[in-house]
Image 1 (tube, rainbow, N blue to C red):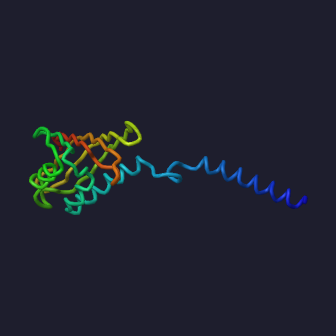
Image 2: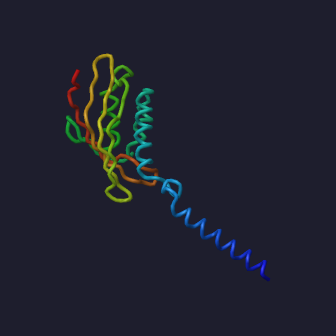
Length: 158
């Protein structure tokens, strides 16, 4: 009988210690880290762009007519119009250059929405170009996607 009580005591102690350790685990170990998920979308976009793959780059955007893009040409509405903007503005690898996102700041507006601020820079033979952006991400059934993009060009200082 004593052996059974000791065994139960050790099991209970083990479960208690296990619960305490689990509670101290980083959130990323327990559930998907939303900031990491948003940053992964941006990293995938950067990689796709640098491979000249506009289709893969566009996967970061919400494929909806409700997608919006604000820039020097005004407001563009709908995924098809955003896709056309990218294809027209960057028709080949030379125009695309090499993309780098820097200074990323991710701020969650609620558990399913985030604002991302950052800078973008294209290194190109015909001349570098860059600027700033603010992106609104929303957690959708297909994952985190950009639902609004506001990108501005700022002259590159040499």
